[in-house]
Length: 144
Image 1: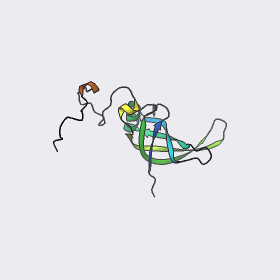
Image 2 (image 1 turned 135 degrees about the vertical axis):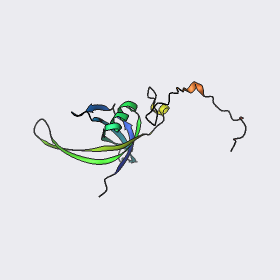
Image 3 (image 1 turned 90 degrees about the vertical axis):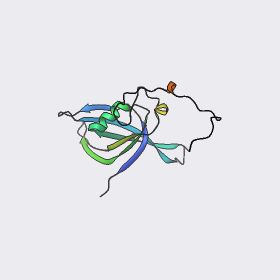
Image 4 (image 1 turned 180 degrees about the vertical axis):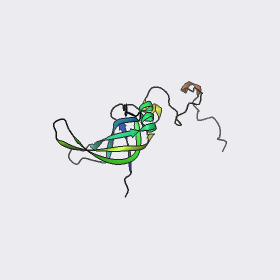
């Protein structure tokens, strides 16, 4: 059997980080995913809101580097949970359990504060946009 999902969308809220009783990190958040087609009646794109759950180091990564509005690519599996609400009614929820989460935008596009390193480890070098200069059209030929 195959249960594999790839989604790309923007976080609708900041991740909610919790820990289980034995200290395992778990982060919950949701993403807004636009469908590829427009609604026939309204002419607008339809958006799905998908709940995501990440565990352990993936949860810590999401909590540290993602916030509301950031574009995320989520790779994972669909999980259906049955539960009972406070009124005793049986409910069913679908969520994606994330195996991997990637940045779907650049830091500038996401307009997120702070810094991040894709490897998860700091290189010890602080670099800012002012350390670079814009190349003009008359900078000569490329060396390759």
